[in-house]
Length: 467
Image (cartoon, rainbow, N blue to C red; front, top):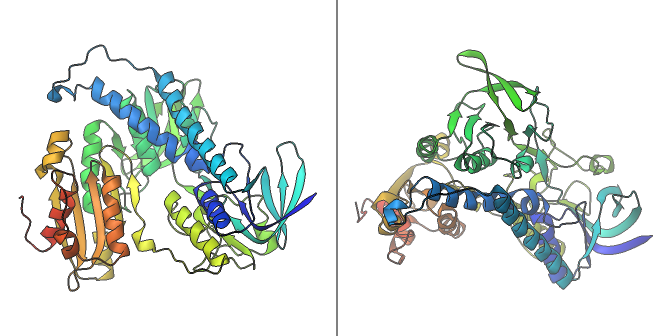
């Protein structure tokens, strides 16, 4: 049996399903292949969405348990945790959203094939179902959007129970007494924060000597202090060499500046990054070029070295972010349809959904220094903002970096409440080549957190008002 389409998308994650919908809007007969019955990929099923649900729930529990609501006059006693209800809420949200993707596919007449897709010829994809049944599909264009998988490190074997990835950490049956997190990246810090709030002792072992090296260094230093104050034991410059399970105990061996040591816990979360998911895809056999790190090489419009084969998202170089994959998917299919499009990588925000949140877009101060670009900076703390004081969330600040001569905004960084929302203002400013003066002159409603953005922009020109 064989079916023919204008476009076959392999992978129904954020990049794949958004690309499929946009292609259908453009009139392309589209099919999408995914090995899971529930659409949405890692992000929707076992990544972005379920982790944010647990982050939200666990923060409510922390506020109630730790008495931080007392200052609001809210007195709570006898606070308890029903982990089952919390996890069920997370699963319900995931189910609703995955059904939503299916509904969008139905609405746009996108045909779905459940199974593993592999490239088996020019313009040809073979889909193998879980039962072993095969079907051959053909199309003028094939878009690879297979995402990424968790990376591991030598000496640490995953047993998907005591030693696992973020997928297992989303559904621990009980609150770990001591959770050891290997890797202080976004995933490790978010999931570490969840279980710390729910009562776990959390130790984070990070190989790099600096905390959040991709984040603006000033923001990262402030964040480290806040997280440590919350109870996260963050250890930098640590090389993990092994992990052994003995019953319900895991012993993690490591090396640091003090020599060889070990630490024991009852759960280990390995969050040492992710790698492209291309195994079994048949891309190399077909002639699709890849770089030394296993990423598929593409041009500015996501064409691979094989005509008619395109790739987006985590399988191509660049930050592994759902919103980056979505934008690449849209540009790829619009290019197929003869329309112009581009992705401005300087305007892609990165966000750490802790409490407070960390968000940034554009260049960091250390990047500007290394590049020798002259710049000015403006900062304003949430502690001087009326809305933040009313919320009782005054940790952090907004920091804006602008070119010293042109005043064009080059970087926008936030540590604080709703940073994930505020960073959008910076992304739009960079996308439209706005100056700090433009933000400073724009009216920001009072009282709002966004006034911190306005004050930081004013500070670039040394005319901040409320400090």
